[in-house]
Image 1 (cartoon, rainbow, N blue to C red):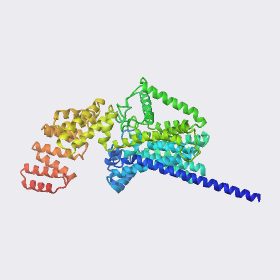
Image 2 (image 1 turned 120 degrees about the vertical axis):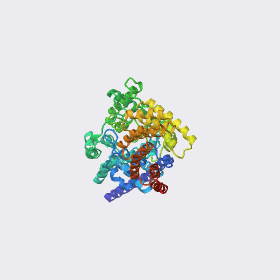
Image 3 (image 1 turned 180 degrees about the horizontal axis):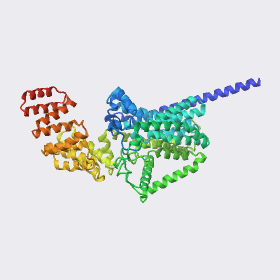
Image 4 (image 1 turned 90 degrees about the horizontal axis):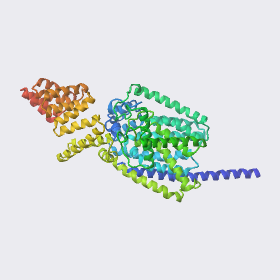
Length: 632
């Protein structure tokens, strides 16, 4: 009888525990809804935005994305920049991110040019990322659910993430974090359950993270750190658990080396793409330390924000710079504290090491990322910051209590104040990402000493001026403003050929041939094979200077460097006609017509050439064809 009672007691006890667990799970379920709705609401105002900034790399200037399904095979086997540029940029190791590129191609196939849909997907993915972050943290620190919840709310609200969500291209950051979280999630499930399927899922998601963005490589250090800190494994056990992930990473690296032919990628000598070119090792270290200080500052005080932090907003410095020294001391102090305290599995030590490990790959110490820093590079490292902030909030305002499944009232006010400030800043910043003109108009006030920011804004002003729908009076004002910012960019960086080319275009629009030639020659001094400059030089000498012979020299070079340059072919034909060389003019126009058989302009030019040759019959035939043509 006693035995029977004992069994009944055990059953009742187990049942009570199961019911309590279910109750807790239900209570936590409401937090999943809160997190999702909170994150989605914060970024919902981006859904009405247009394409902006780096969206051109993956969508608007990428012909393979615009092929939809048929472009996927190319996107899956080439560098991120290859679709737009035809090859990898001169950045160490290339950029291999097929998962986000494929997602953009699928969207284009299904919805066409629909930035609103792409923004909606980004917002949805971010909200789901936040939910997944909470779920993963609950598995890593199950006895600290409140810290997990507060961490996720801070992460969702942090304005530093505005670039990642509002810039469609930065979906690579979201995908990478999603798959890394899933990998960790299934790893901890496997450790708890022993189910080998969970382990397999963890490995698969790790591979997908690598195929989304290279920063997944840092998980090789984060996994053993996490297991050591929260699963009470010794270091050897934690490292052994990481070996399968290392094998996956090595296979991935070998595959990307073969596909991208990374050994053939040379170092860029353009400071706008390689800000550390030509400086000493100590200067590079000092500048990296300075940017680490900027990163920490932006995490604590995310204001002001910018899409660009390039030269010369972030200057090249030595250790004579006081801010570089302060940053170095702060980073060294934090790392020293973490190394000492991690032995006792201290959560703050864990977050510090997590942060520096995850930010290392974008620090420019290991590889050239093409910019001194960027807000999107903090997407993964900010997880560590948010966890540390939540832990400190909990310790200070709640004495570390996690006994209830409800948020204590005494912590609501301070955390609510932070979330409100962060949310207001994030929502406000989202509006700046409406389009390029809006974005760069906002950022030029934030980073006035950035050569790129000045060029970006000047370029957008010029594009608006060149739009056929822009009224003549407004066009002249836009050209003047575009001239100011492009000159400012050139003053900051005297070898900025993009600004020189824009200034050449501006002076062409203002019928100032000599100034246009001056700035276009500056481009050619730096890049003699610059196709657009050769073509524009031909236009200047042909149309503005009335020197067709000189124009032909430049136009022939433009066509030599790019045989598909239809504008230069057309202008070359016009210059031949201006010189009375109708035979070469006709031959050139026919070459243009062979590439674009329905061009009204080319058909009219051929008709005019025949008329000048005295062949009125053929002249009229081609004039009639021009009337029926559908292309300009």
